[in-house]
Length: 287
Image (cartoon, rainbow, N blue to C red):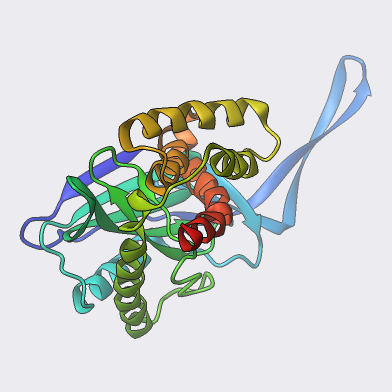
């Protein structure tokens, strides 16, 4: 599920319904005969269930797992955004959920921090904040960018803050402000590198090596990547910018097996792309 809001005069307070913790029970069936049985309700002490505001179970976690409520954590993050050096003029907020609401991604786009990579080809700063109720993600923030023309998510080599809290109740807002200020620096540094990508030539052999690495032995994925690369080469030429966009096109737009979990799948794909980015940077340095 996706919700998009454009911020014009400051961000309306973000809010999420609360989840609750409940004991986990299982029903054990004992067959007496082929046609009769007994059932026994058993409490599972090692785990507990997480239930949403409509009383639907959305996750099962260990009994010691600390739930960090979206309603708390995202309000604190947005306070930090406004206290940071980020220019929030025209900021957009996009909320995505997956795994039946157990995982949440809030993406902030900052039009005031737009940089032109090539003539008419701009990228815009994005910051994504992840939280989960199923233990699938730690609470994390990622800095990145979006290519304005096609909305490819431009991936930066490393996330700037692995975690601001390890599923405790609150974050350190001062630390969050520092991380957000650093995010702007990281984005600018990466955009300064991307500016050189359109003029960095890439041979067919070099491109194939990187696409093969990303495909990880999947012939189907490799074929898809090669087809996508041809499209970008036709548009941009045989250069690093075309190759980079091939990777981010796949992570952002390629067909999803499960549309409901699309947001989570993009995060997984981007982690794979992140692993091959050093190969792109190596090509830039020798170009």
